[in-house]
Length: 305
Image (tube, rainbow, N blue to C red; front, side):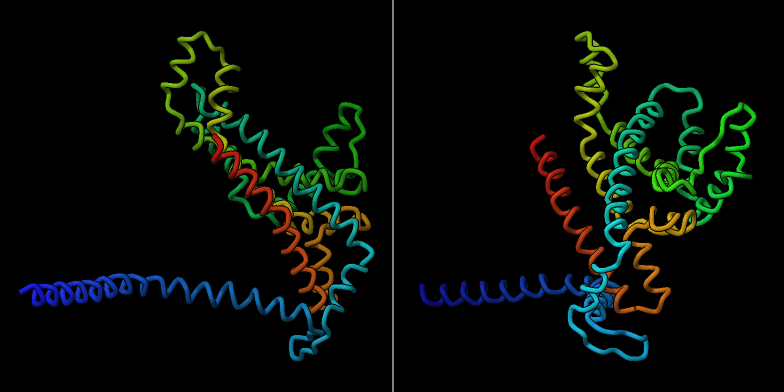
């Protein structure tokens, strides 16, 4: 009887293991469509770009030339300036969006009359085409016929060459970028602030804490996840920025507002596809080298809290 019972238990255990295996395999088929799409639209182009960066590529023919494209790309005279501009542009726009986005979110979550309308106004630039924004601001900030300089002239103020002065062209583009992208940062911060339990603020007010103390001790620490999201999104966007810069200055005057993205595009325009693909690989590595430690640092702070 003991042997029969053991055999039944083994059969039962075996059939249970088989059915468990079947149950565990079946749901994985639902991942297949997403996996195929990921493979076709992300993995294959990514690995193909790494291959083409090692070739002399003319769209119809390729010739493997090793690391020559990378050596030539690093010898580009505007690359060092473009690399520095990329870092300045990325960190300036990211920092401004964090500070201004948080300030606007605090304002727009207060008991302000018409705050729903004001939220729409702040978010509206996000919906506008980046190229359209660039062309519009290029017309508004024209040093001779632009509306802004014309208005300044009525007060006896000589307006600067917003996009034509080499010393401030990049910062002017960064300011336009902040104006356009501020709505996303504000929206993320608003979501973070309204998720904070009101009991914390009520307890703080009972203890006599003022508005600044509530912001410093409650709001600021508890919107840390929102801050991490805004920093990561805006920094990646700033480091990869190209369209707004191209629509306003085209990287000029000279190379003063060139970033890595515009340097790459100029190589595409000249027909050096392998060389420009090598630039894209370099940009990918630069963004990864900056964002991985930043992301780890922000996530570690979030876990510590």
